[in-house]
Amino acid sequence: HSLQRCSAKAAEQDIWNLMQFTEDLRRQYGKEPRDMELLLKKLYVRRMAADLGISRIYPSGKMIIMKTNMNRKVFRLMEETMASETHRNSLSFTGKEIKAELLVNLPDTLLLNWLFHCLADCYAIMPALVRY
Image 1 (tube, helix red, strand yellow):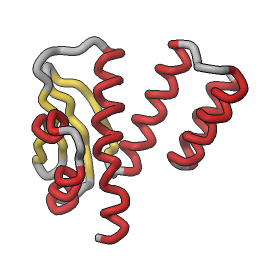
Image 2: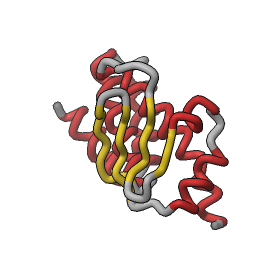
Image 3: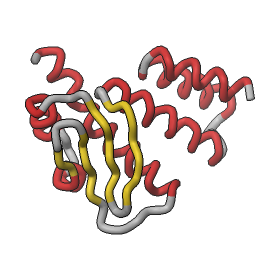
Image 4: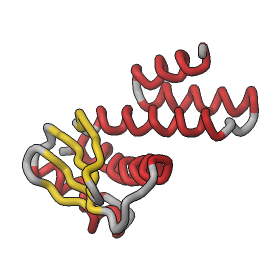
């Protein structure tokens, strides 16, 4: 449990602390077991979401709804910086929410994986926002 506590504490600080924690963990113990990998992915998703101004994420049928305080200009900028056309084409913005439309209902672990990769793709906007 102390490993979980330490990882959560690292995630609370910022993404770089979480990345450093992950590196240290792998250096010390090798590749993490599946359960720890899932925990880390959840922490990364929460951290990236918070950094992007996303306060809540929940599935709704084949959609993932992300409550956000982001404005349309930032959303457009984010879309432009995304590398994955698949992620870019699945996202829409309603003013208070970013909606991701999936082709199928995904089980929780695959949903987490999709979110992780999508938010990592969204995260590419960070350098552009500093200039913005």
